[in-house]
View 1: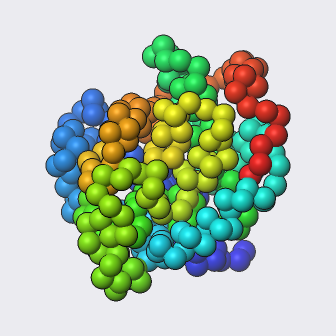
View 2: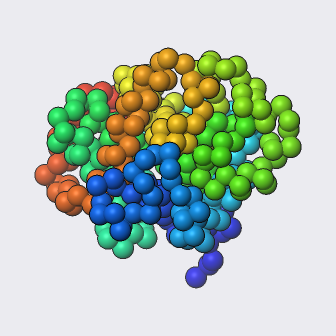
View 3: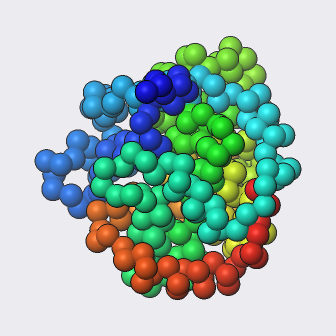
Length: 296
Ligand code: FE
Ligand code: FE
């Protein structure tokens, strides 16, 4: 069997999600299952780092090294014309499960299960349709894998580029290898941006969040778009870094990003969804908001 190429250090993209769950354990888990306070500000990163799997650490090393302003601009030029292909939401879901659902020992279709479990968690708490739909589709940008992108350009915590990397970003010491560290203009708190200008004007590291946001931005309410675009921006929504780049709208909308995060992280342990029974209602929900095909 061929060894995985160097740019796939994790056995599957799920490993990153698992690692995030380990970093942010569910607040009402028993204390001994946690290694950090439920206080967002007081994570013990040293403890976290000790338990980080080698593949995940290598993944972050690559991510923090290669996500530069220049790289992000190149990805925007490559993808944001949205000329890769046309496909519907369900086709994207199917493609995604085919490419990355191979190595989870618990289930044959972890991506679809994660999509449905997130959506079901939101539905059970009585939230509106747009929020349920957001739970369902939030990770579809991972189809970037289909286009041959390495893991570090698909998943991982996201962060702004073109300004100083916050110490609140996981394993931030690994930014030492990022070329932007040697560009003084990028290493001030605001870098190439102005204080308080709003995240819409800030370039984020490239991955499934920004990509899906661009694909669906004409079809969903702003709250949903914030969730999709910033759900991996843990330095901001969990650690409260980068407030100096945000405007009032970001502040307001991040409440939804925070509200969503628990459905993303903590619904995996819930009952396995009965896909056959649930899929028809989700098909109707998708059809309410989206045309049959979207530009990817
Ligand atoms: Fe995600
Ligand atoms: Fe997710």
